[in-house]
Length: 280
Image (cartoon, rainbow, N blue to C red; front, side, top):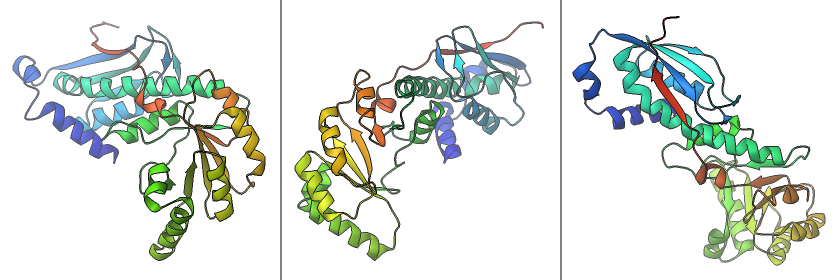
């Protein structure tokens, strides 16, 4: 999957050729470039950058100075890349685009995970990702210390409000889902979203699920209903959770908190790849 994304991105950016480089850079020219960090944060995408460089030109040589997941500050140097000048120029923007976004996601994830220090609650991402590069964005969440929720629609069943409404109610949705899994022979976890205590009671009466999502519950409401939820169920809180309130939500004892903003509302980290003409 990673190489499919890389190949598509290279085709998108280069097309029938990097004509800027082809026009003015000699075919046999070689050079060196340095990746400069211009923001404070968490670095992510170094391993991916090496994959991109090698995918395009196996002869490019990368010297990594800072690994993924490291805390970086403005002025740090992450790596050097050396080889064909044309190859460096052709891959420069793709490497930066991925690394800036991934580092932004990792930085934000790290900041939120830090707010949960000392608690057992795990921070989850969601499917609110950029189409076509979800793998990279969820990779960045892991680098930042978060955990991945389901990757896509096919690897876990999540019965959200629209599924429940279309199915005719919670009981019908859960029963139909279990019948579907039995019929198809698929082994998938089932999560169901509840919007209030009445819906929670209905889920508990039916059972046959693995995780319950308490959607838009306040911390006070979660603390009130958690004692009635048997230990066999995982419990996830989601909706309306901010940096100011996430610690309070985690202190209720929920197993997971999912935050869509990890991958849809982040600030990219400023990075720059510059030609290196140093003589040392």
